[in-house]
Amino acid sequence: MGMFNHLCSLDYRISQHSFESLLFSRRIDLDRHHVRSSHRKAPKSDNVYLKVLVKLYRFLARRTESNFNKAVLRRLFMSRINRPPVSLSRAVANISEAQKGKTVVVIGTVTDDNRLLTIPKLSIAALRFTATARARIEKAGGETLTLDQLALRAPTGANTLLLRGPKNAREAVKHFGFGPHTDKKPYVGSKGRKFERARGRRRSKGFKV
Image (cartoon, rainbow, N blue to C red; front, side, top):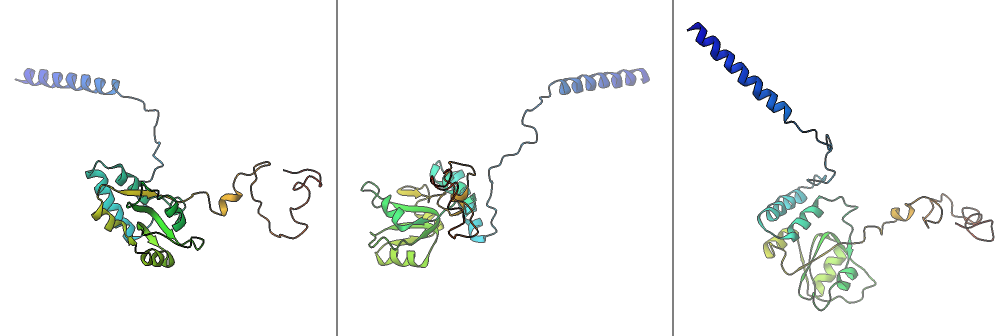
């Protein structure tokens, strides 16, 4: 009996050793070790309303085959710099004859443009509206929707037009891109006659970049 137990334990150790050698021989050395994705999986903001919208559009993106819901969800994750405002004039300019009757969707702020004298009847859904933009849209007979109201009306994004504003229109972007011949805007402390207006700025004063 003791001999039988000894043989069984020996057989078990041999099989365990062969399994471990097989396991270690099959390991793969990954090139992308400790490299994490830089894409956002959730918004940084603690805004409760934004978190509810993310939960809603995460559900819609998962349960529908619509690329619209995936695009809205991705834009809800973005920082405010990457969600620039859209003016009423930009929204009106993008509505052609083929786009009439569609709901304009902006994942950001809709702002007024006082250069636009008259606006047509519009249906716009956005994260927020400035007071004057909301008043002008409603006065023209249009409607302003929240994104959760849009989800009830168009859960797959049907009959919508997704717009976004110009990301590089900020004042700060004009200073980016250091170097000659880049037309970057200098950071000038004083803007008098003597400051950054002569040498290097005009042909008659040595050179111009």
